[in-house]
Every structure is written in C-alpha cells, then in structure tokens.
Image (cartoon, rainbow over all chains, first blue to last red; front, side, top):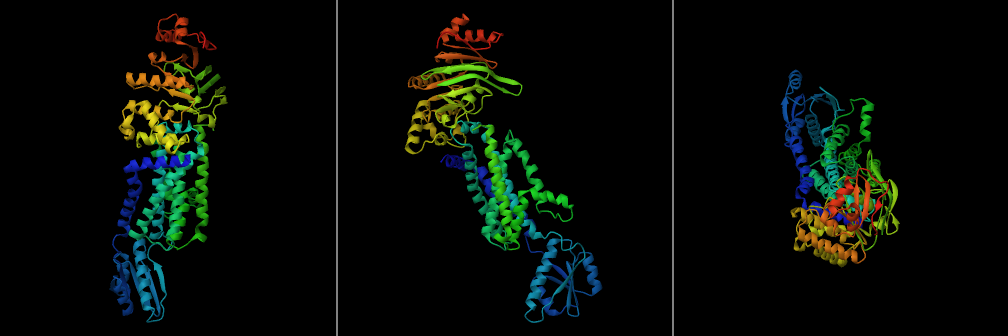
Amino acid sequence: MRTIAVARRILQQLRRDRRTVAMILFAPILILSLVWMIFDGDPYPTHVAVVNVPPPLINALKNLDVEVVVASAAEADALIRVDEVDAVLTFSGSSLMVLLEGSKPLARQSVMIALQQAVGALATVSSPITPEIAFLHGDLDLAPFDSFGPVLLGLIVFMFTFMISGISFVRERTSGTLERMMATPLRRWEVVLGYVLAFLVVMAVQVVLITSVSVFLLDMMLAGSFVWLLVITMLLAATALTLGMLLSAAARTEFQMIQFIPLVIIPQVFFSGLFPLETIDPWLRGIGTVFPLTYGAEAMREVMIRGGGWAEIWPNLAFLGALSLGFLIINIFALKKYRRL
Amino acid sequence: MIKVQELSRSFGEVRALIDVSMEVQPGEIVGLLGPSGAGKTTLVRILAGADVPEFGTIHVGGVPMPDLSALGGIGYMPQSDALYFELSGFENLQFIGALYGLSGDRLKTRIDAVTEIVGLGPDIHRPSHQYSGGMLRRLSLAGCFLHEPKVLILDEPTVGMDPILRRNLWRHFRAYADAGATILVTTHVMDEAEHCDRIAILRRGHLLAIGTGDALMAAAGTQSIEEAFLYFGSTDAVPDQASPVGEN
C-alpha cells in the first residue's frame, strides 16, 4: 500500500512537471528523427556502370531507379576509381561479377538491394544468376548501417531513463524528503519499489511511443516481433532506472548527478555496437561485455534485423533482468545510510 | 516517554553529542535550546530514527530506537521543509498520511483537521511552490500531526511565522500536551522557551542544564531565560553530567 503511495506521489509530481514529461517523451523522438533525416532521408541515388550486361537486367535496374552507365571494361574501371559509380557489373559467360566501390556502407547496401531485386525480377524468365561480389575498398566486415538503429534506440531509452530517475532520487535526498519518508514506518524496500513502479509506468509510455515512432514512422527495419522489442527496451529501461538510483547515492547534488552521464553513457556508446569493434584488441572488446546496453542492443539487433525471438534473446533478457534485480537490491541496502532499519 | 541515556554521536572528528541523558514525560513540553551547531538537530534526528546512537540508548515509549513500529507513533518535523513543490499542500499531506497508513475518509478528515490547526485554510489546495516560507513551514508542521502521534519531535517549528500564528500554534502544542502527548521542540527563540515546561540547554554536544525556566534562572542568578542561557553558555568548564536543576 505504501509502495503504491510512493509511486502515486512520484507520478503526481511528474504530471505537474510538464517540461520533464516533454523531455522524457519528445526529446528522444526528436533525436531519433534527426538521425534518421541524416541517414534515411531520400533513397540513395545509386549509380552503376555495366559491362556486357544483357538488356533485360539493365532495364530491371533502371526500373528500380538505378542510374545505369553502359561502358567498356576500361571506362568502367576509371569511373569506379573516381567514385563516379558505386559499382561495376560485368557479365562474362554465365556469371555476373559485381565490383563494389565499398567505402560507403549506404551505397554498398543500396547497390546490393537493387541488384537483389533486379535479379529476382529476372529469375522468372531466365536461369537464376548468382552474382560474385568483390570490393574495391573495404570488405563485408564493415558494420552494416542497419545495425546501428537498434543501438541508437536502446541508447536513447537508457540515457533518458538514467537521467530522470537519478536526478529525481538525488532531489529526494537533497530536499530532505527522503529523510522525512525514513522517519515514517515506510520500509526501505517500499521506497525503492515505489520508485521502480512509478518509473516503469513512465518508461512504458516512453518506450511504446519511441519504438512505435522508430518502427512505424521512421520505418526502422523490424524483422521480428514488436512485442519482443518492447520487452527488451523495458528491461533496458529498468536497468537504467535502478542504476540511476544507485549512482544518485554517490551524488550530493543534481549537478554531480549530471556528471555521471558522460561517465556512464559515453563508454556504452563506444562499446555496444554503434562503432565496429572487430578491428580492436579482443581484450578491449571485452569491455563491452560489462555494459547493459551491449546486451540490450544485441538483443534488439537480433529481433529487428535477424527476426529472432525468445530462443535467441533469452540470455540477454536474463542478464538485463538479473542486473536490474541486483541494482534494486543494492538500492534497498544503500538506503541504510538514511535509516538502519 | 522519551528516555535518552548517555547518548554520544560523532561525525568523524566532530563530536556532535557527548554523553547526553534526559527524559521527557507524557504531557510535557521540553524545549531544546542551544546555539547553532550545539547538537540539537543531531539529537532530534536520532529520536526520529533518521540517525543511530553511537554510544548510549534512546527509548521512545519504552521501545529502544530506532524501531520501525515506534516511528508510527512519532510525529517528526525536520528542519528543512521536506515537501514536494510540484504538489499542492493537500497532495503533500495525502502522501505523508499514506506513509503513516491513513487512507480514505479518515485521511480526509485528518487533513482537514491539521489544515485548520496550522491555519492554511483554502490555500491548502494551491500548488506548494507558490507558498511563502512561513506557509511551507506550517504545511510541514501539519504533516506531523496527521496520524495523531503520541510523541512530537519538532525541529525549529515556528521559524518564519508571524507572532500571532506562533502564539496560536503554541496554544495548540499546549492543548496537545495536555491531552497526553510528549513534545520535544528545538528553538533558538528565547521567548518561545517560556512556553515550555522545562528547558534543556545544549552546547557543543553537552547537555549543560535541564529544568524549569524558573529553576534555570535561579541557578544562574539571572532575571530572564536569555541571561540564563548566556550564563550557562559562557561557562567554559563543561560538566561531565548535565546538572539537573530544581525538580522536574
């Protein structure tokens, strides 16, 4: 009952604090939209040079809005070297050779999608073609563009939840209201649970709104189930919430709490998949395994890109769940600083 | 009702309370008087369960503190207002009441009653961030009467209030004590000390004297509490034990 009283009071406070509500709900959407405007605005203008390619395939590519330049092998080679075209398609015998320029993930991706669709369209009229792919620069190991959408989504949810919960708990400490609560028969776990309850309500609204906007409005790729995406994001938010509360114990002022944000958030940005880690030392890569965002982002990528479900993501969910529970219990003990009982 | 025995508490190098012993009986108002930094708030916080004794014991209603169930019978008014400014006065009281297990009509009745006592009237429904300092203090005070506690611990309850309101509140404290409650009030307003049955003078962590105002004045050979306070305060030789002055 007292837990509910705590949760209800926090929600009442938030309802009065319109700016914070706006920040929780709309700032993430604004950030996501901006990033998507940069990366996902208009379709990429794909240019390819074709050498010796049969007209049906050229037509199929043109139908997909690909700029096609018919060229000799030497001309095509010159064009791709100065980045005038994104790829050169060469037909020799029965095999199709694809040389990708390769420096821009987005160009590479759009060539591959166009080629796949064009070949697919032709498959009904001729024997199937398997393209052989080569790169002028780089190789397939470069992080594909799609992989960072889920990380970004996870990061934004984590950051805002961490910030809001941490700061509101610091305020509770600095204003003396925590001490007052602790001078009543309210139990320590009731305080922590009340907080978790209130913020889970807020986060549920935030998560549903942000993931819906990402998937349905910004057209982020979602191969798997939307429900799994919500589950992962909620667990990630729960981890951020309990961690925020915990670190707020080490902050004497709201300003000091703000200082935790770069410390907690930025390393997670670098080590949880937003940037390719394949090229760095394995032991350095290992740092990522301690960050909640790594597990959340990995699970989200699994669901959003590879269409995975419970079988693939349960270890990640279990880890995030255990982490949240662990932080929650430590929080209950950390309150002993305010009352021994 | 309140029994403090040989209580000591230090924070690092700072010894906030040294060997303090005192008792407050039901029906009695005891004023805790002392300059800032004397240890008043430390003592009051230990009584309210917010801090723990380092040495010595505290019993409230016969129960050694800190004790969760005993906290339900104590009304504690902290020095900081400790309110939620986003909420109205009413909503603040609703929350505090709920923490003491009040709900429904009973909570509503009690909120109306304490609002009346502190004279907030219709302002109770205004957002508390619009309140003046004195109004916030009154709201905070209202919060510790909600559950009709047997023991009241008030840390500078009347700071920032006008004289008329202050007199009314003291009348109310007196009526509340007459009904059987035990009240401990900290203050550094001397004329408030005159409303107390007994006065305890605290300085640098030592309880220097405890007794009725008249007894303290007699012992100090002074004409006013203020002079008595100055007398006890200027004595550099600090006694090992509080010297009980006169009778209870």
